[in-house]
Every structure is written in structure tokens, then in C-alpha cells.
Length: 182
Image (cartoon, rainbow, N blue to C red; front, top):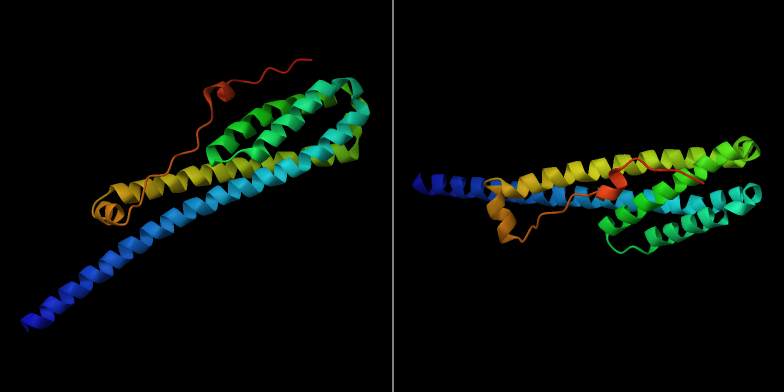
């Protein structure tokens, strides 16, 4: 009888250990998935920008500096190595895009252009998706970090080298209201 109780206890411990380990893997993988979703949406956004720039060029020929800035910032997003670098580059790009959208107010023909309107709508939808992906990523990172810091998962996390993940941070400069001027 004693042997059966010991075997049952060992099985319960093994099952609990496996369950906690698997839940840590699940949290980590979900955070990675949301990180990937941010990349997908940023890629989608950077793919739309050349079309937007070309559409605006035809109407706002003397705004070349603004358009060149958008292209350069787009390239910064594309060339960024880490997720945090991509988010920072994307924040700068968002500010530049606001200036391009403001051009529409100065050029009524551009504002009426169907392609420009569609591109603006696509970029707006993509921006919403990027924002959602950032929020989802940070929420999942919070759940993951909490899981690896609480007992008894913290023991399993340290044994298997689960490391805390960083939240996405928006630079302080990007938290200020943008100033659009021409």
C-alpha cells in the first residue's frame, strides 16, 4: 500500500511539473507569436508607403523633403534588428506619415483622389492592427513574466532558463502630441 501511495505522489508531482513547464512554454510562444504579428503588420505598413508616396508626389511636387523623410523612416523600420528598434523606428514613421496626411488638407485634389483615400484607409487600418498587436504582445509578456516569477513555476523557470521578456516601450519623445507644420 505504501508503494502505491508513493507511486501516486510521484506521478502527481511529474504531471504537475509537466503541466507547469508546458504552460510556461505556451506563454512564451504566445508572446513570440504576438511579436511576429507586430512584424507582419509593420511589414504591411511599409509595403503600403511607397504607393502612398508615389500618389502624393503627383500632387505635391514641392513637398519632396517630407516625402523623402517618409521613405527614409520606412527604410529604418525595415532595417531595424530588434522588435524594440522596429517599434521606435515605426513611431518616428508615424509622425512623418501624419505630415503626409496633413498634405491632403493643402491639396484638395489629392484629398479627393480615390487611390490616396484608399491608401490612407489601409494605413489607418494597419495602424489599428499594429496598436492591437502591441497591446496583445505586452499583455502576453505580462502573463509570461508573471508565470515565471510566481511559485512554484519560478523554480521550473529557473531550472529550464526561462528569461523575462521586455515590454514594448514607446520613446518619451513620441508620447508628445505631434507638431505638423509646412
